[in-house]
Image (tube, rainbow, N blue to C red):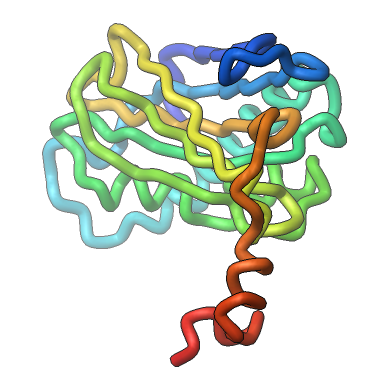
Length: 199
């Protein structure tokens, strides 16, 4: 059982000026998307596991290899995330199932030697729907400078019976970051790192 991949789409931007100021070095954000046929489109399927187990490793390895090449190396990626957009004949559960599995995400996590979980989005929409890929620091989930979102769209995807599966990354955080990190907030509020909500 293999994923039917209609096409691969890459997205990249290189920011030279942010907030009316030049950046010290170009800030790069990039994503790689696979447009695949949704194996469950148009019907209710109770057990999604066979396709999740079959597709996860294939798509994880493919997209990880392509995004690492786009970035230049795993070390070049400081922030990372994943996303899926299911077409209108599918369920949000289909988008979730294909990306919320270690069989998919661990390829990317290991390639960039990350400690943090992969931030994520799973949505439904028609062709040209916004694809949102939230990112965060690959090693420090509380580092606010690396809370980012890549946004792009694919004019002809997803079709009603497709899913767009995406990995995203960035070479750094926002160039002129100045809102602090959650650790400073916790300290000021007198909250423990292990119980940030103080409940």
